[in-house]
Image (tube, rainbow, N blue to C red):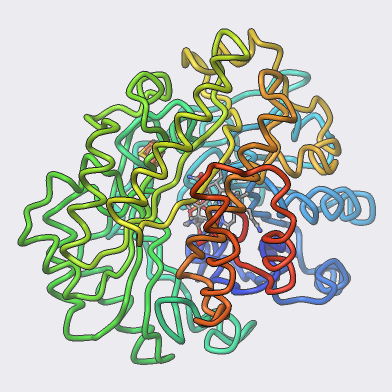
Length: 500
Ligand code: B12
Ligand code: SF4
């Protein structure tokens, strides 16, 4: 009775991806322990499915991967119900949410351990310790409760990514058909595969959840390993496009160009996330080969056009407002679409300054659209992350912001919208300010509907643009009901909520 059940809670209503988080964990115990995967994205009633496995009496360890937001809707009630019905099981949570909020999770009483950051070594070591009754206190990347005290063990150095085992795609395919469930139609292609080629990020932006976990560290698989894996998925299941899920795929120009040269003959389209200042240093020749090799669109955290805000966000590097605009223009000649995300609603000493900053960003975004209208804009409202010691987080706490003190409160409607970076519950943002951001977003998406909405045909695009252009021209964003109605009827795609 030592089998492992790994659960990916429902994270999206459609366009499901290969559940890379738990697949990495499955790889870490492959050949050592028997494991199964339950994917909440692919099951009508995942709790019954989990209970079916547990009723065999063969499963002792449950591993849940948890992101903030919708995944909590299943993670919290399921963990509670399972622990009540099967008290002998060991419940282990991993992923960004538990690594960032361990106290409230462990104090719930129904989660036994948290893996803090990468679980590739920590998870098998923990299972071994529990299985053989040896101490777990020295295992790195672990968080547990000792009495009333939350104990965090030391962090492990990031491991050589090429030394990690290949993901057990074939076994995943026996649970859920890779081709039917996970290779979806997107703007990039008909069978898009999600691939994660590096962990962490070398930067320390103070609003980013990657920072407290990875502490400015980054490690990547080599271009050759990435190519080999993708080629395997292409040959076996016919993938024709790639979404790179790395926090920062383009850190190394050398690796990117090497990969581009390898993948070019495969005729696949691809997308990834990057920093503007990093990629602005790429040579013209590198940008050209990246595009020729199929990279059509790149996501960039632009965050703000105001250099003081970029400093407040600790964006690091050398990014400036002027560079953000210039770079959007530069990418135009390579036919690469920049997808710029902005974080609106950061704190300021007075309400007038918060408002003035929102207005500034709106103008700035319009300038970007002017120089390169194909730039995709993704708007987030600033939702604090607990980056202990950062000036921004201290400022946020001093202004009265507090996370829920009880785990179940995270699934209240208000905190769900916080997670979606839609309603930040930050005391310095008034409802009027939030409305202004949302209304501007509606009008902007009306004039420039995202290219990633593949169901929106040319006629619909023209119609909504026509209706929205007048408002956009004269800065009239209030009550954009007519645009909202069309977006609702046509089920307009919002990358900021639905993911890329
Ligand atoms: C794919 C993805 C999604 C997918 C769904 C993922 C799924 N599971 O089905 C979609 C697009 C739906 C999505 C949505 C959102 N996402 Co998301 N997502 C990602 C992304 C890009 C990749 C996740 C992944 O597969 N990583 C690859 C694996 C290998 O890495 P990993 O998850 O870190 O796993 C390692 C460890 O964490 C640990 N681990 C993880 N799980 C487990 C479980 C167990 C049992 C153990 C032992 C260990 C363990 O071990 C693993 C191997 O070392 C990450 C960023 C990133 N690069 O990780 C963001 C990320 C997790 N998402 C994030 C957010 C906020 C969201 C949203 C909630 C909000 C938003 N507006 O984007 C939305 C929610 C919308 C929705 N409808 O769900 C944030 C979380 C930030 C935070 N504050 O904690 C991240 C970090 C992006 C970011 N940089 O801001 N997301
Ligand atoms: S560059 Fe991006 S991933 Fe890296 S710390 Fe900043 S926001 Fe996070």
